[in-house]
Length: 159
Image (cartoon, rainbow, N blue to C red; front, side, top):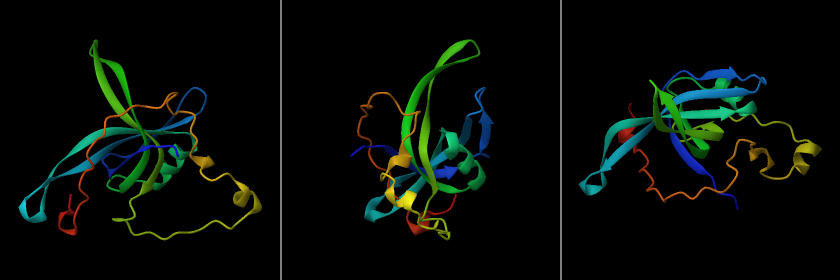
């Protein structure tokens, strides 16, 4: 079984869709990740969110651009990419989440599922094949285990 990293949060900026010299789509969006502090008695206090960069490529980038707007809650599957960039003549280390899949968060979003008709081609497709992405890292990433953030309670669902 392949393993991917997953995150959930909210879209903090308007999604930006651009195309490279080869006309390949790239989505960029700023995201917010909500954080909570555990309190005695099982309650939690909302902390200020952290903000991060998320990118997506190929057809997924176009679909996400069409379907998402600032403020939408999401869940995403992908990986964290670290890189170095030059800012004001100085090198700066940074990171971004590269999303294979980006969907609205079913816990906090009301939606209707419209299923595509069944076809022989779809029925014969290898399960999970659509998750393949040429932008995946070449070698498996060794990541440190991170504690999972506590999911928000219904009392904490305001921004």
